[in-house]
Every structure is written in structure tokens, then in C-alpha cells.
Image (cartoon, rainbow, N blue to C red):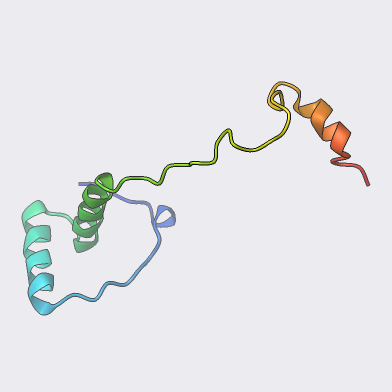
Length: 83
């Protein structure tokens, strides 16, 4: 059984057909977990099969190629942080 701390979850509302709600009741009872945990587990499983969007713009912009190595110098040149 997984216990989810209250602060780590976002409350949402789901409308279910009566038949699906009864099936959810039976599954939760069989697993000895809450209906919410059955729903979370099903959503986690479904989310594993969703492909994450790929970032296609990396490396396409113009600019200095050494920003990571010389961040302080580049920020100073742009005036970042000055009033």
C-alpha cells in the first residue's frame, strides 16, 4: 500500500459512470487500497506509455558557444545585475 502525503498531491474531480465506479470500488477493495490510489496507479501506468515531446531547438540559436564556461563574463558584458 502506498501512502501519499497530502501536500504532495493535487486534488481533482473525476466523473464516472455508475458501472465504472462500482468496478473501481471492487478493485480498491481487492487491492486493499483507496479508490484514489487505484486511479493514481492506472494514470501512472498510462503515463509511462506517453511519449514526451522532444526539444527541437537545441543548438539552433546564434550566440557565443562558451556561455556555460564563461557565464560571469557574458552577464557582465550584457549589464545584467546593474542598476
